[in-house]
Length: 397
Ligand SMILES: Cc1cc2nc3c(=O)[nH]c(=O)nc-3n(C[C@H](O)[C@H](O)[C@H](O)COP(=O)(O)OP(=O)(O)OC[C@H]3O[C@@H](n4cnc5c(N)ncnc54)[C@H](O)[C@@H]3O)c2cc1C
Image (cartoon, rainbow, N blue to C red; front, side, top):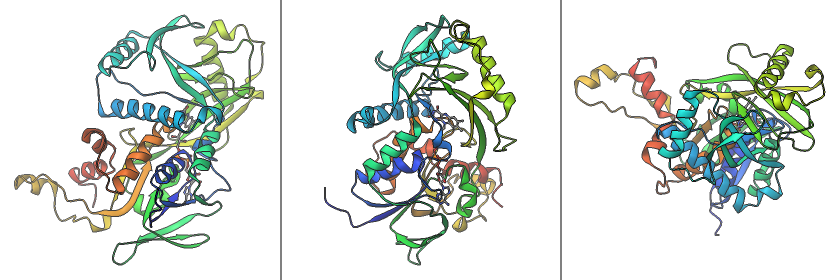
């Protein structure tokens, strides 16, 4: 492929930033990956094991269509780049249907989304004997190795311990000037994937994103061990490299970094109640001796990812009120953008499943390629949705 004469800067070496690097690599765009920390995947993408499977709703919604498409895209990247040989993982995820409502939702989701049985099928989870949806190619993976391998495949110029401190468009808006702790970089495209540290960027401060504390527990492989991931509100992964993970407790109000012993207890106790046939066969042990990990996910107001060209709030005409424009029957709000700046954030609890596809959508749209996804999905992801909502509620002034 011919080298493009363009340079992109990607900010953040979590799974989101890595995924953008891959989408840029596939277009042969020279890429600089900036990471404030000393290496990749040290924050939300740094858990020892995470699960990959789609979010489904009873009827087709933009959210579930996106999630299913993202899962299928993840699988295609997994195949194309032989990630099964590079990333520690175990195939197969059971999602327990332990209430009538859950059964109704997920069994109908398979029909309404026309999901073939090699992707998802009704089943019974052997340890709980409960009905479940089984995702045969759903995965428990090491997010750290996944992120690292995607970066290796993308081969960007990497600057670790280099923090983006400020950025602005050049005077004629043809370039973006980035100030970093290691100096200035001029680029044609800027991709922002700072995760929960989004609020340090004044261009993003208006976005209704939330930092949410999560705690998991890593413990040595038990005997017998579950061969597949099992999701039951919380989740237990199968063993990878001699360890299993139990997750997760979440808190959006208190965000301290120290692990909470009581949450370790809650996770352990929850497992004993939900999967007694598995748990009762294990040797008795003290979960406080295992390794908890605290990290922070970023959650948007509607829990859907934020993917798209970044609106430029400083150029927004706030004199136009929603109520006034309604009277004139012109409901549209004119949104100015930073034309060469994109954001991928708000990945919530599903960054591993969603980030590769979200990155592909973002890079493709910023490069003005023909739109290959449904408008309803594309629009549901755009940051504009919050701006419009805030404009209607007069929350922008
Ligand atoms: C407890 C827990 C369990 C989870 N389990 C799962 C799961 O099983 N499956 C799943 O799909 N998802 C799971 N998630 C969600 C998933 O981990 C996240 O959605 C995903 O890791 C987010 O990736 P990210 O790249 O957006 O953020 P991060 O991984 O946090 O990366 C952001 C990066 O940006 C860097 N950065 C920030 N500001 C700057 C700056 N100014 N300059 C340079 N660099 C900067 C940071 O240092 C960081 O490395 C879980 C999340 C948590 C908290």
